[in-house]
Length: 275
Ligand SMILES: Nc1ncnc2c1ncn2[C@@H]1O[C@H](COP(=O)(O)OP(=O)(O)OP(=O)(O)O)[C@@H](O)[C@H]1O
Ligand SMILES: [Mg+2]
Image (tube, rainbow, N blue to C red; front, side):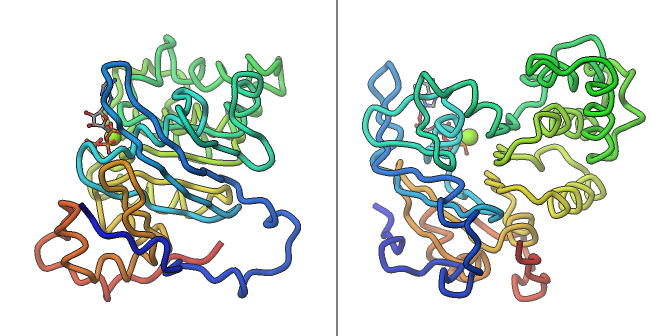
């Protein structure tokens, strides 16, 4: 059983140092006592408590099967808790709020093919905002804005299944950004990216102001992007620390089947800019 330091207050960011901004009085994400089992009886989440402030970027780390994706699917109501609660800002996630929650929380799936289903990338990016009622020039502007944000304007007329893996990832991110979400949740966003694509994704995500939860096994990526790391182990929060501190703790990493690339020195990466 992984040991927990979540309760000891080793949080990355001191509330005392944050400005008294009204936006920050309600966490962007507030998960309390969340328990969830799948229909086959498997208990995937065993009491998750997690608060994320507006504008924070948090890496969600942990072994295969730890419960990261299951947790992410609760943040926009795809999964519904057995016990406990999930709030997005002031909104309790429940059936009556699903539509608004899904506008506020943009979930980028691990597999971009789960997100792209229209004949062209432009139509895929337009799909969500069109459902919100945008039409004509407003819709065109929204699509152009989202594609430009991920440097994918040139992909608008391309067929998603003809794109490279990295291009597909950017297109999938654009479909979510087109909804102008308050919270962005990305599940394994670097898998399949070449080094340049990796670098570009870091730059894109750093340029976006919204709250971000980034599920990843890519520890250098987590360190570059997120000041705070939450390690999920066996359906619980096993650690909640600064990413730099977590990555410097070899025993913690080993307990959760995490490892830095050979020769990687976490001390040599510039910390992410604070939001
Ligand atoms: N549809 C399902 N039915 C039953 N069990 C499931 C289902 N989806 C996931 N699980 C189980 O729930 C647990 C948590 O799975 P989850 O996908 O959340 O893990 P994860 O941390 O995202 O892992 P990975 O790093 O491999 O993506 C695992 O034991 C998994 O086998
Ligand atoms: Mg997963």
